[in-house]
Amino acid sequence: MKCIVAGHQALSPAEFAELALGTPVELWLGVEGESDEERAARLDAARDILADPEYRGLPDDLVRLAARVVEEHPDLFNVVPLARPVRSRPARRGAAA
Picture (cartoon, rainbow, N blue to C red):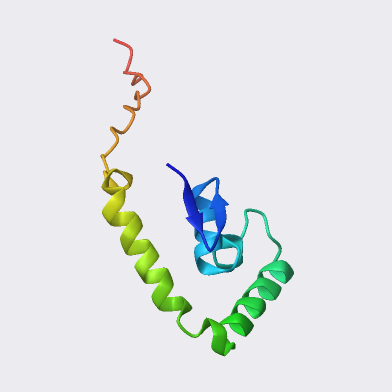
C-alpha cells in the first residue's frame, strides 16, 4: 500500500512524518552525536518554525500523528521485562582446617 501525502509518495515512516508535518523529523528529535552548538541551532530553528503562523497548528498535528501511530501499531508498545543475567559469586575462601 502506498502512503501518499500532498502528492508525494512516502517510502518510509520517517518520510511520511516529514511530508505530513512539513519539516524533517530530525529537527524535532535531533540526531545521535550532535554537538551542543548543533543542538542549540536546531532548537532555535524549531522555535522559529513554531512562531510562524503557517505552523501554528503543528503541535496539534504532532499529537494527532502520535495518537494515530499508537492506534495503528499497538505492538510497538508491547513492553516485556527482560530477565536479568545471573551473576556468579566468587567462591568464598574458607579458613583452612
